[in-house]
Amino acid sequence: MADPFFRNDHVSAKAGRFQLRGRACIVEVRQHRQADESVFLLLTAYLECVPINRTICGTSVHKATVGRGAGGKATLEMVAERAGVSPSTVSRVLNGTAVVSDDKRKAVERAIAKLGFVPSPVARGLAGGRSFSIGVVTQAIDSPFYGRALRGIEEELGPAGYSPLFMSGHWRADEEARCIDLLRLRRVDGLIVLTGRLSNAALKAVARSLPVVVTGRQLKATHLISMDFDNRAGARLAVEHLIGLGHRRIAFIAGDPEHPDSIERQTGYEAALQGAGLRVDPRLLLPGDFNEQSGVQAIEQLQARRAGYTAIFAANDQMAFGARLGLFRHGLRVPVDVSLVGFDDVAGALYAVPGLTTVHYPIHEIGQLAARAMLELLAGGRPSLDVPAPQLIVRESTRALTF
Image (cartoon, rainbow, N blue to C red; front, side, top):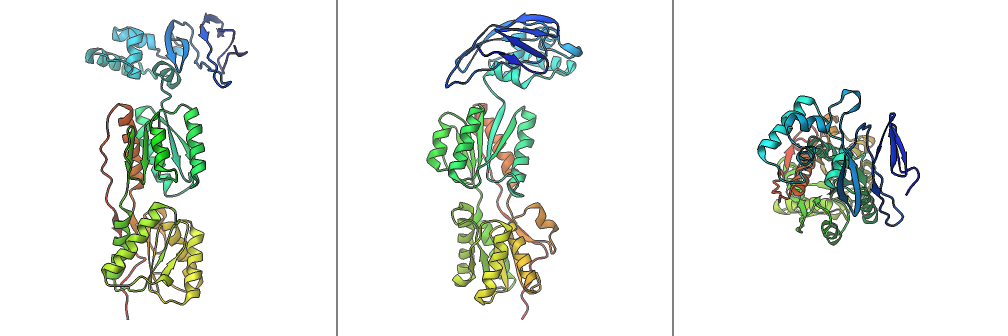
């Protein structure tokens, strides 16, 4: 057995016995070792303990439960006494580990509300075999785009008693796989993947042992929910808006060539031109990578080609911001000389000068939907998702072409 076996700010113990602010009690633990990893039991300051058998991941733990709490705080036994039920019934209500009658559930809920009892997430996890945490693999935590999705996830998981654990994959399949491995070691209860580069087969394999919600895909598998946004339709809206203003020479700044959103947005750009009887001019197609600097560089290339253009559609707002700077450096004004449209509708688009016309990508709502879907999966349901359609947000960066 590890020595010391248990330690935190309130208690310390060796060989299965620990001292609690001058009061002693015994917790019997048969420690389980696998791959040189020890199982640790984390408790808060409990003064009286009653052993209850639980089995978690092959480890038998006699969990200490609360008799009376320190500092006058409400305890599980106090809730049980007020509700007229056993402590184990209170535990089942909190963790959803067994069927409890409506009368008992309501009695426990009333007692919890009256006493202001706050269950320990660690104790809940030990009792129910859950960590009450959800792993979230984004691509860039500092992205103004993905940041809104993370906020939506937090808003939904928090009230349900779950905490998100965020990690960045940086658009690399091997890094995303590493993130997932680390999150699984943390024993997350489910996994949300925001787009990413991992193959569909890899995500299906993860879903065999862990509920998965993935965005930016159309994928079906047991314990896996996917949701996709119509990027192609959104791009058509942007280009058709420019065509409607009289523009015929419309440049396109593409995103990451391996990213499905970028591919679909270019497809929508080309479809809108062809639908209006306009040909796709290769000289007006500029490479990008979804970052601001690539927008600046795209303008340098566009100017060097001398192809002639009156409008630009960038595959995301960040590149549109970079393009705006590049145009400024060449003495070109938006929208007087060049109309400019982005995609995503990040927060900065509203406050850009001039305000950026863009396609609204409901990334905040998609984050919320992903979290709700995960909660439904954990409850044994099969979520049905309705992803909002793209919308064009017209601001001051576009205007009708004048001859």
